[in-house]
Image (tube, rainbow, N blue to C red; front, top):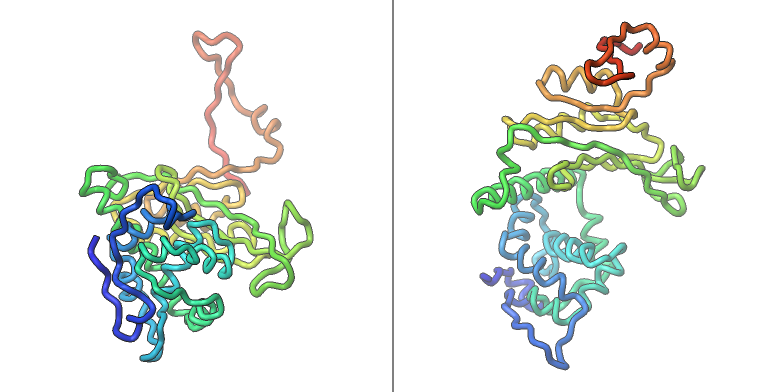
Length: 295
């Protein structure tokens, strides 16, 4: 593993990444051993360098920590089960994990929060582009190694869904909306797209709690397609909340497919009007084929 470079101003808070030999002894034990391969992988793919290039963020010359630092710390902390910035610092309190990653001093919770508060709207968009960049790089590595052809397959199924995330108090951006678990509570209503083959999240939009399921889904899909290979055709799969004419028309004009659940009213009456024919070799079974356009 190649040692990572650090700026002169931060040399007293972080050493070069080191290879640590792990043995069963009574000293240097860690409860975060599962995160060590994660740290090594992020270092191997040049994660911090990619963050710096994709999301430029300048701080003072004497600043010990930078945006790329807190992004790495937060990402690894969340993989370690952290649900708050305080718990992120708890994860990194592990001395073995810090040594593997080359950290001498971890920023306190308030420092991490202060750096994130410096992030602008433009940088948030850059972070979104960064996730697509990292995914593309990962797909290419898998292709070169012969482990996966996900990035070059001509057709991929994409599952789009929304989820309700209840909050406590009056959190910024939260609102009262559809909440099946806690009616009347404020919440967020993010929208996500998953690649059915690998179960990875392709894209996510953060939305307020009173947003309807399909709000912004056309723009959401346009942005998703812009970051997927041009030759890739998707099959959009969603529940009845995504049965929207504008979305279906957009997918049709772009040559993509869709499988969306539809709530049909008076279904029995509709089926009774159709002409049915017996199925050969299947006694008691009949079939009918017809077209129907919803209003």
